[in-house]
Length: 95
Image (cartoon, rainbow, N blue to C red):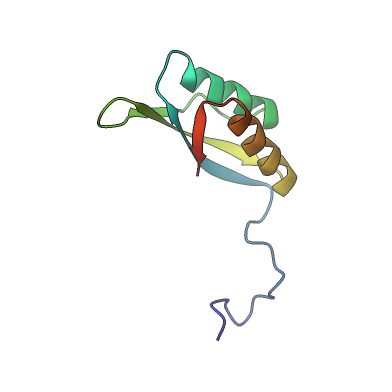
C-alpha cells in the first residue's frame, strides 16, 4: 500500500513552484559563516527577503545553524544552491 494520497498522481511534484522555501544550513562556526550563506542564497534567489535570518550556536559552540527563507522557483535552482553551499567546504548539512 502506498503512502501517497489516493487523489494525488504518483509522479506529482512534492513541492509546487514558485514557493517560499525555508532552509536551515549547518556548518562550522566562524567569522562570516552566516554572511556567506546569505550571499549564496541571494545569488540563487534574487529578490528573496534574506534580512530575516536566524543564527544559532550549537551547545559546544563548534557549529552554527543559519535559518532563512528563499523564493524557490524549481528543483534545478535548489540543487544548484545546495551544490554551491556544499562547495564552500564549510557547510555540513542543508535542510
